[in-house]
Amino acid sequence: MLNHKKRNLTFARTGEMRRRLGGLPIVVGAVLACLGIARAQNTAPKWSNDSQAFPEEYIRQKKAPAPKRDISGTWDTGGPTGIQAFGAKNMPSDGKPEHELPYTAAGRQAFLANKPGFGVTEVPAAEANDPVDFCDPTGTPRDDLFELRVTQIVQLPKKVLILYEFDQVWRVIWTDGRELPKDPVPRWFGYSVAKWEDDYTFVVHTVGMDERTWLDNAGRPHSGEMQVEERFHRLDHDTLELTVTINDPKMYAKPWVAMDKQALYLRPDDYDVQEMICSPSETAEYNKVVGKSVDVGVTKPTK
Image (cartoon, rainbow, N blue to C red; front, top):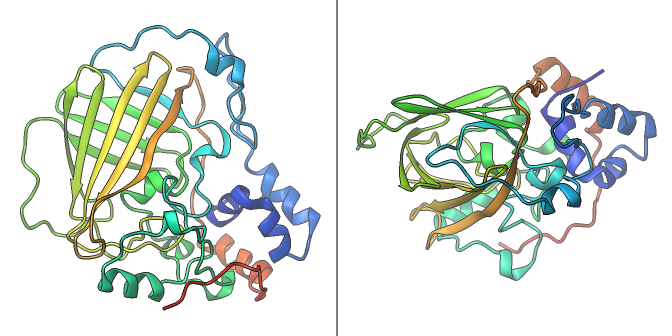
């Protein structure tokens, strides 16, 4: 059974995948089968991280108060709500004028040079130059804006660790009062520091991201000057909200909110996180299946 990032990505738009594959139900079935995630086996609310979001009766339950200065735990967006098929959740690349980003001239040029498999400039899979299609790391903030699945947060005395299900990667966020580097050597996930704004809001600032990464799967670019702010707000015991703001004056004329109060729900302590790792060999096999060029009827932007 195949399980790598491109197949998991197509889960967010199964209808599009059917068009690309000419309606091959066997392939679609294999994709969906490998995306199933085990249900929690204890007294906690039962839910599934497949095509179904968290049940409304669970979301409506009265929650216990949030613990102070604590965002630790295993968190889950619940189904496809964290899987942004057309780019950043708050500004999807869907062709609507209200979702057009405030590109600078350089930003617009960089955006049009990218060839994503999704969004208004999408190309057939065989023509895409998406870095993650070649098993490059997603980087920050794409780990939030691409496939935000189960996320584990560990708080230590001087740092916070964030472990992502997608690609089995982690980040270190320093909380020991250090400054961000002034002239950082670029890294895939940058350099992050954070502090508590209040007892329930943890604010992370990140710089120094490698320019080779994209912001999302719609091909939005960034420069080495980008700064990212992530706000984790503990709404109650079982709910964490994430807001992501992009500030990159070289690519965008003003800061923009890429994700606004995305809800994540607390999983049981014994929840087993599924393995999701990019496999170059499976990527090559995928390209053989979906490499045929097709017209999916998406409106293209003018240059």
